[in-house]
Length: 150
Image (cartoon, rainbow, N blue to C red; front, side, top):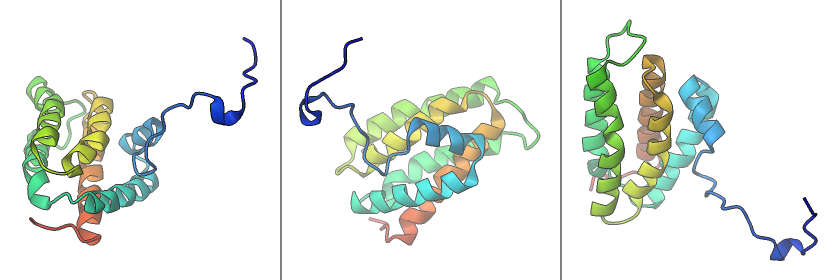
């Protein structure tokens, strides 16, 4: 392949995500169990969600559903059963809908983070549990950085 001899400023750029959105490898590390990556990324995301004016009431329904799914997973389970897996996957369109329905960018930004994480869980119950920890950490940092109720 020939070298690109155009000046750097003229070369097409690969789209870059804002620095608060975890990369695919960071999402994979979080879902695989790297608690250090989880903490660093959750804090960045929590701060960004405050800046984008996400309210706790906007995310309460989604988090409540995640808690219901978590309650349905037996502590010794290695895999999610069919119904639980289905409920988890259906969070993706629910997040997309809420992102369009709500004012501001908060829910859209939360969806930008949670959707790729949900897609990486599969049926693995431990990966799901780590996703729940990640979601909890994001919400905790959101509140710690001044996230509001309304």
